[in-house]
Amino acid sequence: YLFHRTKLGPERKRMDVSVCVDVYLSVFSRWKNWWIRGVLSLAMISGFFMVIYLGPIMLILVIKCFQEIIDIGYRVYHSYELPWFRTLSWYFLICVNYFFYGETLAEYFGALVQREDSLQFLVRYHRFISFTLYLAGFCMFVLSLVKKHYRLQFYMFAWTHVTLLIVVTQSHLVIQNLFEGMIWFIVPISIVICNDIMAYLFGFFFGRTPLIKLSPKKTWEGFIGGFFGTLVCGFILAYLLAQFQYFVCPVEYNSETNRFTADCEPSDIFVMQKYTFPFAVQNILTWKTVNLYPYQIHSVVLSTFASLIGPFGGFFASGFKRAFQIKDFADTIPGHGGIMDRFDCQYLMATFTHVYIASFIRGPNPSKVLQQLLVLQPEQQLSIFNAMRDRLRDRGILPPAAILEAALL
Image (cartoon, rainbow, N blue to C red):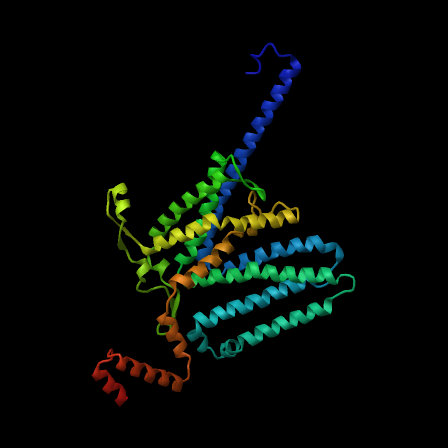
């Protein structure tokens, strides 16, 4: 094209060649970045399934996210040589993890813990021990205060606690979701990943209109395309996982077999049901009913949140990084940044999932109630038994023969 424009002088030709080369390099760089992000995204998805398989490695990811945020504060205020900042930060991390993991152990595996005499003391006084550990760190912070740096030291004290709130507390909610059933862990995390991928693809190929100043590369086209893509991904994934007990059954400890199991009678939301379309929809779609798992309807709600509200976790992280003039939290993953750069939306999603389960899904868990009864004293168990017997008798549920047999016992 350039060399056929013979009327242009040599100087203009060199300028046009330079412009074309710049455009070519820009497009090449864009596609190169696309391939790097694509390949590493597949690697991270594979790593995600490995995390699911290994289980406890989740704690390592929590520690890594905490370390990335704490290091930013340490780099910013390193020149002031604030005493004990990193030591106290890691100490508080240990205290908070001890508290949350202890709470989980006592709540879900109380019957198992009660069998171990060495653990009964730790469970009984768990909160008192946790508070004592925190008070020790609090006193160490007060003793570390240095004249002329009071304000900075309190800034960093608040920095540590906000980091613990964002990272550790919400990670605890991820674990709580996991105990409700693997599906409540896999689907929310997967749809956030799906939304990120879909928004990137739609933005890459169709993006023209900027979405928000905090993230100049985000576009309305990517945001809207990601929304519809995520709805489809979440709906299909919910259908696939709802068919397997391994994914839908909560993790429970069987005191008789002395093993952890994920076997159960699936609840109603994981049983296929027939739904009738409204009359107006029937005329459009030409069929009247559809068979769905109720969980697929819940997945639409989760996908909607992941697509419309979840990205604001990423925008929040972008604003945080811009405030400290850094591109990424770390350089752990080439092309993606640090672990926290990939989990900025996940924590918000985990909190919503936990609130959603508690508000609309979770009901009384017979297995958990039984575990709590088994750790009571014999006289307390007998009192509850008598109360339940009288209650069932008054409601006409307990047969007369059973009442007579219980009375003889």
